[in-house]
Image 1 (cartoon, rainbow, N blue to C red):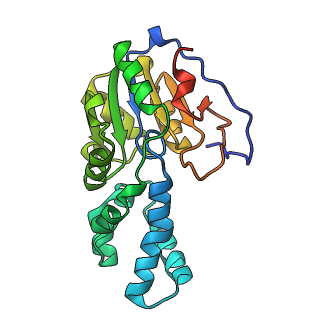
Image 2 (cartoon, helix red, strand yellow):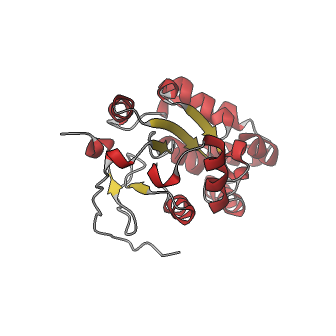
Length: 230
């Protein structure tokens, strides 16, 4: 896999909508502002872990980051039950305490409306645990826009695994050559590309608190407004 440099020139998306039947959308960072997740895992959870174990927040961060890295790109990474057992903490309850930080990116609803208007099959495809999904759907009310919502646990693999896309295609019965995937993780897009998905798009600003960083390998957008007719 290619290594992404610190800065890449934007590759502008040019999609022939007539050649696309199905739109697959990631949730965290793509439809929803990833600031909630970044803050929870990198700041809020370490603060509570430090109190539980009577260590500094910095020590807690270092410990947790090492634990996160061990299960990166697996289903365990997003499994709240797994982390609740591992850390002896009610992780779902902690997420609920800061659910006011959950937000939808600008122009997402307009894009979902447009996809329905031009009669595209619309699926939400997420690595998120079902408990996290429930919290976020209740807060944002975006669920009804989709023909179906699929958590990676249903497929049995994380989206970073190329086999995920084979199984998903069998599950949803879409034509991969006529399918658009939008995600904020290049590793996921590479996995989908290896399976042969026809159209791939990178979200260059998953968190409102981060700077824009375009992909060197895939067309990029900052906001879904770029895909709407002018």
